[in-house]
View 1 (tube, rainbow over the protein chains, first blue to last red):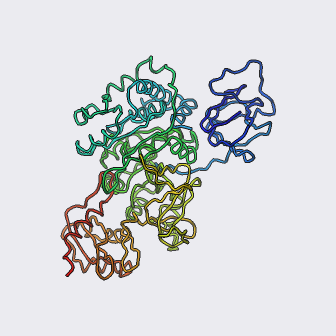
View 2 (tube, rainbow over the protein chains, first blue to last red):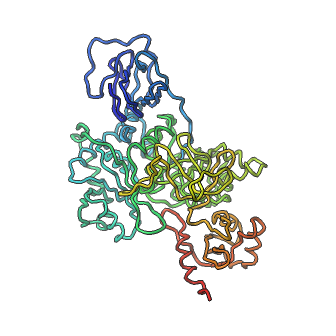
View 3 (cartoon, rainbow over the protein chains, first blue to last red):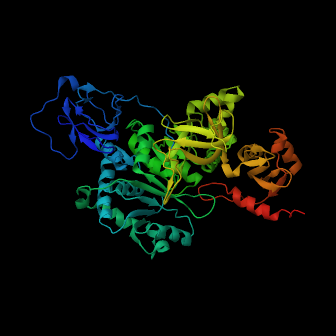
Length: 102
Length: 501
């Protein structure tokens, strides 16, 4: 799938949704709950279930940066599935606590 | 990534939390999103590109901002305090546009070619329309988010361009989503046409912090609303903070709910910071430094920095109270000399910044360098630990006999003199030194002697920093966002100087 910056994707098996913050060239297989993510507009395919190896959950507002591919996504909605690229789990970035300045 | 998504996320995560207005009966995130949707669908059907906002601060402001964002139209809040002719000139520059205008301001802006007007009360009705609220979001290209006319101190206002990616990047890299406690509330008193006003809407929504608007700033009004709404967070420009402290002191008001006050948008006299820390010991003070062209804050002096500085005997740590702190983790910063060379700690030069939130762009003119660096036109230096000290606009720095002198430093000293109510320091042409130090003062009571004032400055700073020209007047010129117009004083006094023989 081609992950353009600003493009929105959703899980095929749970409520998770993400937006691409930083893209990289090339074909990247972004998955959630063990299954390829689908475009925001697409209908969810029937019959798929959450893979137990990818069921740690995704929190809204968390950013995920993959060091291998350089892909960065932001979770806009949370869900039961966790994110992976080609089966390899990607973890959330450490949140930086900054004081409110506006 | 676009800014309307920030509200969509908030409404998805905490639909019933109050987003804006009073704690008792404010607007929830779900309701704010519904109003923005309806407003956006209606605006999308108008024959216009830019969405203009002419009005006071209020709960319709975030609705209008997010409505524009959702349909990918630039949002341009205008300075309603300008004289009518200037306001109309700015409005004409936004054409083709649709302007959401406070009902009592409509007569001031009617009849400008290419700018259709919708009264705020009418737009409120549009946003309540059930059909529009349930309509699908129109397909949109999210490019330019906000256009801000810079309130510079010279010339015709420039239009700063902030794209969705700049603002969204600022928000997601500096704010943790929904981390605010349910009782947190931010009081917004900076005007809608100031970058801090725009940034406050976006960061508060993303943090899950309720916003409360002060329609127009008075220090008494601010203190009363802060107490009534149990405000926990607020951002102020320096002149606002000074006046608020006077009211707090006179009334003995402590604002027990207040947790965090951030300040920025101009040089804060150190004496005011010290007074603030003393009067409000329970409050975290945060200094934010940024420009319109950088989507707001690029450096912060945190509450811990403030406390460490005030408690320290080490002059290096102590002086940080006068710094703007360290760059955000997502920002690169350098100090460069006149030939573009990167300077070492302690050396004064021009502040350069780079990062995803940095736009560095005006309508029809990009000032960002090809490698992404923006020259801020601010003079400053960094200490060994990366704390930035801003000396003022590059053009305001006085160069006397090859020595760079910061006007702000001398102003801070003079302001501590009991007979000085307000002061501006600037350079005037000088045959011998190139420039000499001059100042305009507003006296508190009878004007003090210039010998006495000169001795006062010499007791605290190097003798070369003592003003040679003293000009007493009733008031100093400020623009309406509180920026001191040194250039105006400089021009007047230069004209008054005797012609060279």
